[in-house]
Image 1 (cartoon, helix red, strand yellow):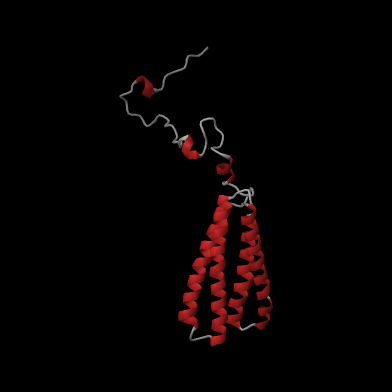
Image 2 (cartoon, rainbow, N blue to C red):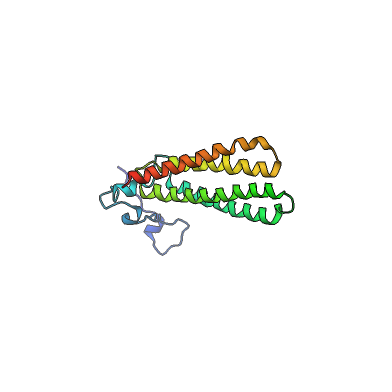
Length: 179
């Protein structure tokens, strides 16, 4: 049987060779990683926050809400400073309505993200998707109507409004169920 040979560095520790010993990789303590010493999750709520429905994370709606709020502020500034000279007062009012409802429902998406984090077992994501679709249909159709003058898009706007109403209904129902 062959004896294991020592590495040149182990035989002569003062020698400087290009071979470095392997360093232990850094690991976070168990408490920070969210596990107890036994390896299981700290509590069921903490582990279920990671994946609300397996795919959808609560942060998704918070990020979407912040993004749509950012765009609403930018759109409001654009409308107040750039579009005032271009659009008629009626079309400027239509554009401002789209911005206002986008901001309201961006804040609603932030509320959905918070609620999904606090109550991971509930179905708040349904309200989030309804608000998202409502923003796209309601505010989006008003933006296109104001900027292009295409009147038939006004028929899509009430569908977005109905999605907003459904989202508020689902959000209220989910909060009611948590009591």
